[in-house]
Amino acid sequence: MQKELLKVTDLKQHFPIKGGVFGRTVNHVKAVDGVSFTIYEGETVSIVGESGCGKSTTGRSILRLDEPTSGQVEFDGKDLLAFSKRQMRKNRKDMQVIFQDPYASLNPRQTVRQILKEAMTIQNAVPKEKQDERVIELMETVGLGKHQIDRYPHEFSGGQRQRIGIARALSVDPQIIICDEAVSALDVSIQAQVINLLKKLQREFNLTYLFISHDLGVVRHISDRIIVMYLGKIVEIADKKSLFSNPQHPYTKSLLSAIPSVNPDQKRERIILTGDVPSPIDPPTGCRFHTRCPFATERCATETPELRTSDYMKDGHQAACHYIEEIESGLHQVKQ
Amino acid sequence: MSEPAIQQPATTPPQPKKPSNLWMENFKNFYKKLRKNKAAMIGGFLILFFIIVAILGPFLTPHDPDTPDVVNKLQPPSAEHWFGTDHHGRDIFTRIIHGMSITLYVGFFSVILGATFGVLIGIVSGYYGGRTDSFLMRCMDVLLAFPGILLALAIVSVLGGSLRNVIIAVAIFSIPVFARIVRGSTLAVKKLEYVDAIKALGASDIRIIFKHILPNVTSPLIVQATLSIATAVLTAAGLSFLGLGAKPPTPEWGAMLSEGRNYLYSAPHVAFFPGIAIVLVVLAFNILGDGLRDALDPKMKK
Image (cartoon, rainbow over all chains, first blue to last red):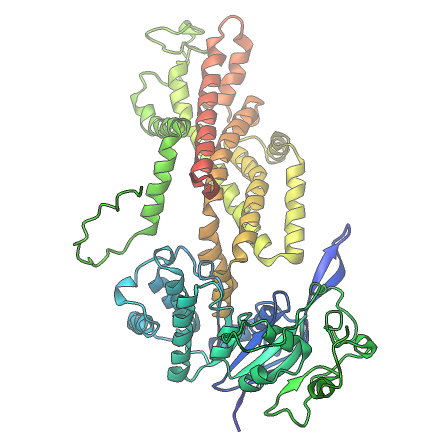
């Protein structure tokens, strides 16, 4: 049995909307609304979903970059949300983050050396006299040259900056790294390089990744397990193989059917969704997807489906839909 | 059709690049842009000149600024007395030169004092947000609600008239301006991902504020400081004019202007020269401030 590294239980992140004369809270944006999952040591779990579905917010809440509204985040047996700010600071060493925008994620006024040394100093990860040595070692690990140590971020390309970001995350020897759209801002050839770098680092340092992305191609390449989110809730969790070969939730089906096929002869059923994602301020009742789901019935509008599995689904494959069996067996047809 | 390829010796060996200095590079860029703005350059050089005069001037003037010479009172400008003499027969040119250091001292000190507090309030307000922010900003609004000179006047009349109290008064009324500007920039900078990254590393708030936010809000600060010095000089002169600042016989320009007021018809030069001196200093700081704003504003890049 693998060791549970990160366990998220019923995580909620509601952002207040202020309005009125005295800035009263008039409503909440329910960015993340009851999300539970577990990440085991050494694996890569991806969260996918369209913009605004709460995938980045989930990552930020786990790290307490935004304080979650409620729920539990257990890391290595420790309840992160119970920590005081000071305790949390000490524990941040084990969980690091790589951001999307390589241009905004580095302080423009610090050299690579300063950036990495500061990271080490904050966590006391490396004694002062060994820091320079370690900086060079880290730079070589992520594929940067020793001669670039005293350069400023603006002297690097996007891919190189992302490598600096990775080096910074590695500098404190974390156990888990949350990659928040870590390669989305890079062009495709660089994406591949950075992803391969991440994979290499995972093998070398036994890292665990929570990989947040909207890019199914990238996700397919890197993950072991995949979480699909829609409007603040998880609609499907499965290992990579089951998810891509046998998606259960209608939303996942439509998401996967949007990937262009390499084989022109292969006929695929394309599920095209209509309408926009409903507002997370006032999400639909019942199943949140029912407003756009081609299979939706009245039951979907009233009853909220829980994540569940069925006999034929393998390896912890779970989906949150009332009709997974019927859709699978073809009994439940798309409404015309 | 196409432009000729960039003429670069292709054979240059990949030289080990010298550690580049961001500050120097930024400064060079900034100076290049500033140089195009003639008014700002004139303002800058005037200020430099004023500072030199303030330091060296008092050693070079031929007369004593405070010794009365009643026989020669209210003399018009002449070769002996370049700017004439006042009602006590003191040389106005000498007094203006001696007053320069007082003016600049008041200007710089009150702004440094005001900016220090303003920056602290603004950065705390912007960084922490929420109630802290509301409370601090409402306090600033209260200060802003008073017209500047009125607030300074009130403070000086409470504290008592002296040059030190003028500095305190001017400092207090420049706090809200700085607080607002810094709060705005802080709000923008704290949303950047590198602040989150450093937070995720476990940095303390103090470290984030002083090492990562403060250095990135300096440009609007410099502009505002320059413009504030002009206001400070003007307010300080105004207070002295009203008799609340420097006490005679201190050669303070506002006070000199006030004394000259009585002889505006018979000897206009007594009021004219201190007035011109104030105008020049204020103008110099203002045009430099405007020029700095243009040079430091990234959106104005051409």
